[in-house]
Length: 147
Image (cartoon, rainbow, N blue to C red; front, top):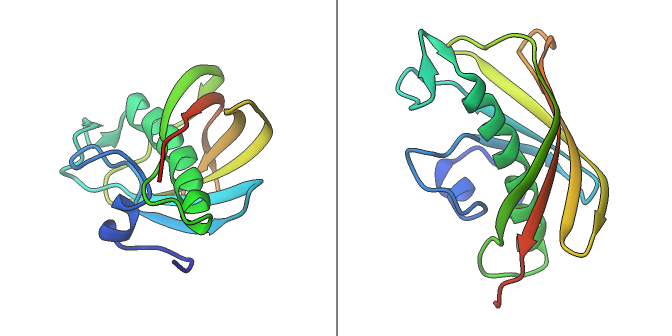
């Protein structure tokens, strides 16, 4: 699997979420320490409220950005399916602005530390003009699965 990834079919191979609850549309770059994802916000997204992507949508996009990074890295290590992840906590979440429909947001996921299956990540979401829309520190746990 090569980067960038822009197709829904490829994204679905990397995360456990199913339609209509997929809140990432691209994986632009990825390493064990940092990843960049994107989401084209469509009018039919289930987390749209009053022509804007909701707070819940932004938080779900952040969490799925972490999952997408993990899924891609797992595939690089020849695992057959993405690991199931759980959000343990969301700390210092700040939402500055909600993006409009038909816009694209990009998220930078940077691992702060990882131990015993738990990962602490800083996620920053920006719009097409590079304005910071939201940020949060998210702690996740990946369940170990067999191949």
